Image (cartoon, rainbow over all chains, first blue to last red; front, side):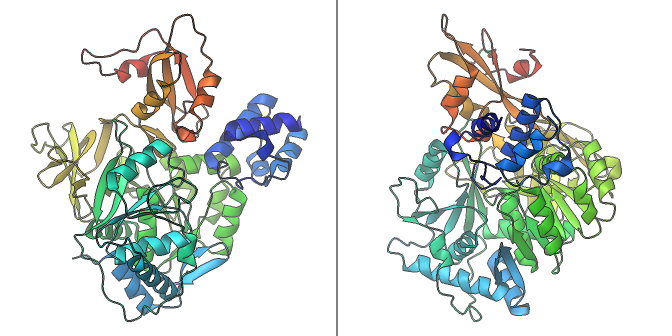
Length: 74
Length: 488
C-alpha cells in the first residue's frame, strides 16, 4: 500500500517517485501546493474507496501520516 | 491627490518606527527597518553597471523579504517592475523577457538567461542604510509595475500601472474594507498576481502588520499562525475557502470574533456560498471584489450589508465610477445589458506596446465583461466576453493550452473549454476536445505526460474527450459555446 500511495502522490505532483519518501513533509516540495494536495486526497479517497474526516486531514503533516490514516479506516 | 506607496510606508516608519511591518516565519522587519532595507536596495540598483533610470526589471514575485526590498527599492530607483511567478513556464517567460527587454532578471538564477541575473537573497543580505531623512519618491505618473495578464489569444498582455494607479487602488480598497493600523493580516495569496500584490500595498500603506505564509497547504499551520499572531484579517480566493472546508470543515469560524475582515476575489463564488461564509462570520466584514489587473477592485460588496444583492458583483468601489456602455460607446440606462466600463485613478493607462484605441471609451476602461447595473448601483455580471478559464483563481488561456496540444504527434485539432471542477474545489478546470489522426491510438495519460514541464500544472486538462471535428465559424474561430453544451 505504501508504494501505491507514493505512486499516487508522485503522479499528481508530476515528480519522480524517488522524490517522495515516508518522511516527505506536505508542502516541502514546491509542487505540493494546496491545489495538488486536494487532488492527492481526492485520488486516495477514490482509489481506496474511503472518505476522510476534515479533523483527520488537518492533522496530516507528512507522507507517513497519510499512510497511517488510510490504514486506519481500510 | 494620492501619494506613492513608498511615501506612505515612509510616513508610517516616522509614526511608528518599531512596529512590525512584515513577518515571515521567525524573521520580521519593523517599519523603520523595512525603509532602511528598501533604501539599500535602491542604492544597490543604482550602483549596478547596467542601471538605467526608467528601465525595466523582472522579479520573481514571492513571499520573501528579498522580494519586498527589491520591489520597493526598484521603484525608488526609478525602475519599472515586472513581477512574475517563479514557476512561469519557459514560453511565457521568454515572451515577457523579449517584450520588456529588462535591465536584469531577479530570482531566476536557475534559468539560462541572456540578461544579467540577480538573486533575491542578495537583497536580504544588504547592509541597512538609515532611511529617516530620505524623501525622494518617484513621480506619480511614472510606470511602477507592468503586470502580464493571460490574454485570450494566448499572448500575454502587459498592463501598465503608474504609481498613482497602484496607490489609488490601495486607498480605495482600504476605504471599503475599513482597514486600520492595528490590523494583522495573513497573506497566503501569490505575490505575482494583482490580488496578492494589492494586499501587500494595502497593509503597508495603512501601517498594518503583514504575516507572509509561504504555502496554504498546511491548514494546521495556518490555524496556529492565526492564533499565535492574533491575525485580524484574511484574504482568500474561492478555491482557498473550498480547500479549508475540505481540510478542516468549519474550523476557521472558531476565530470569527478575532477576524475583523475577509477579502475574497478572483473567481466566481455563488450566493449560497456567500451566505454560508457570512453566517459563519457574523461580526466580520466579509467582502468580495470584482476587478481586473487593469482596474483593480473596481466593485465591492460586503456579504452582510449587501445580503439582498449577493448575486451581483457589488457596487462601484470608493472613488470609482462604473457605467454600462453599448458597442458604440454610449452609456446605457439601468437594467440594460452592455459592456461594463470603469473610471477611476486606479485604472491602467493602457497596455504596453499597444495602440489602446479599443481599450477605453473616453475615460472609461472597457473590461470586456458583459452585464447591467440596477438603480442602486449594483453591477450584475452576465457573461465574460473573454473566454479565459478560471482554475482556482488562476487564469488559463485556452489558446495557450491548444497551441501546446497541437505540437503532440497524432493530435490534428483541439479546443479547450472550462468545465466545473468534478471535485468541486477549483471552480473551473480545463477540458480538452481532441481530434486525433486516423489509425492512431491516443492515450490521454500520455498527452498529460507530454504537457508536463511545457505548461504550468493548473493549465493541464483534467478531462479529455475525443471529437470528430472542432466546431468553427466561417472565419475559423472555435465555437466554444457549442463545446460547452456538448455531452462528449
